[in-house]
Image (cartoon, rainbow, N blue to C red; front, side, top):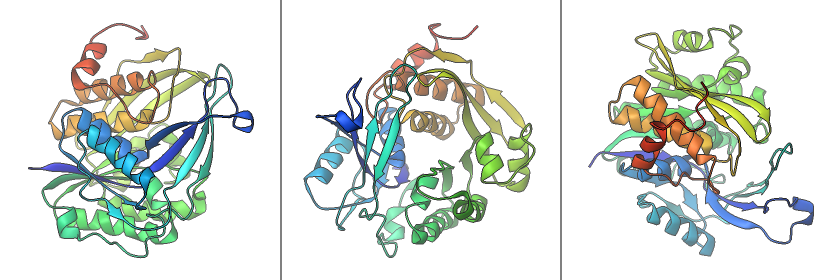
Length: 328
């Protein structure tokens, strides 16, 4: 059966409870996630056949992580075991005008210390129609700059569509380190998640007003470019609107805008949006329907704790067709 494959680093997230700071917290909530893992779970929630690949240490934390993936019907047969540790990060949950903040502790994780691609690529890509990876994975190590590109090239060689989320993280690498890597991998991408800041700082495109068209001109093999516009009114109050650019048709489509008045958890909202976009592409939906569904999915994710979106297709569609919090 044809399936979607995502590949990246799984993480243990330790979050403060509301109203606490890391420097005085006595308890932390455990959450398992990671960009590509979140996309896999969200796609599986929508009824897609999804496999997730990573490398984990063989310990109880990894067992809990894979059990969570199983509960969401994600195939874990592509997960490798070995190495010393599972990467983690600490999230200080913001409130009111105080934004959330993150402390990473992910160096030397099992996947980051890989010295070669350990997967049998024929087995990894068997029956796969779409491969998703992000810039976070490329940033794991200098070697992963090359391993990520190899995976994307091998997918394309097998006529598998490649989805790439720019997902730049300044705490993982500098612009100077990231720019040549992004420019090298983008010719292998079909579906690209990129925003205005990505175009300016990572692709060095000066035309901010027409950055989507400029990206498409530079990488004409792209089929869709997508993302969100997030207008921040306070650290926990946003106006959110999704968009998608159909490269062949030179068509720019936006979703209806939403006002998000209360944020329970912003982590993973971008992954929820990406999963909604990819789900629509895989199922051949119209661009307007794709972007409306993906945006509604991202909006709902803000309302639940954890890295993954816990809403199924019918719940997202019911919300999408409602009127609550839609900006008129």
